[in-house]
Length: 427
Image (cartoon, rainbow, N blue to C red; front, side):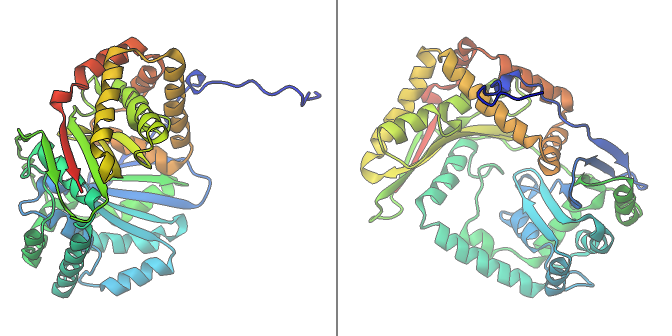
């Protein structure tokens, strides 16, 4: 067949494609631990996540969750922090520990062939971390120095304050580290938190890459034989206490020439039916470079280098926050324009051309996410930790494709009410 190169191939919109989330397999290890895994790679690499209920939600003392995660791989009964680092470097692997609002995740990236060498060390870290006193003191010193540096940055302070305003300063989603909290950390605090919340009986394991039953057996060999000590974790309940003061201005630097603006409100999490269509509305409003906020406040007015709005869904709540930094002299003008764009969306439906562009952007990004094993695993992990299956993913795709401009306008009228937003300006 001869190809006529004068005729370009047909161009298809992303909304025309079919989207299918590759299936994930679930196994029970010999001791009952759940393992979710998928074989979706072409390179001999693997990612394994161990997810624990060890986020900020569960800490009894402020800053303990982050400190525990930060020090988890800094020494066990068998390995020093240096030996752990050298072993990871020798095998070309990475081991990361991160504590979020709800969960803490230990992530291993490795060549598949090195798993038999690395998994025993990871098991040792999870089951026998000792938090050496010297390492705790180094961590505290570094955390204090980092905090002091960050507190000079208006955007860092603004991020702290908007969460505290929305959820309350004592709520896990609104609480932030302070100097006295870091200074008060004790090794015993970390050990107590670690023994309760990094208990293997509470873990969920996720694996992706070029994997097979061989890697499943390897995980089972090192984690399925561990005797589990059952423990019940009280998730507790925290009341959200949004501040009654809707506008908060902070002079962080008398000589500052830049102001950080955060405008936010509480917003339901993924379990709410409004969440998925709001993903589309938020993209149009401020979720990508061609958004309404960017076109107005950056491109037309020149007030900022960048402005975005983002949804932050957590297990027990969520928020919608607009964030930008502008020149000190135009802070008030920028805020005015942000609310103006909200009003436009409330009063006028988006054009079909603009809505199609947003849908193509959103769905085009999904195509990229479904192209690699690690990003596919991230999709599945989010679904599973939120109690969903592929039905939720498929429903979202349908919403992204079919939501109308009128439906988005009604959503804007429901949630883009200025009186429901809090403002933080830090200069």
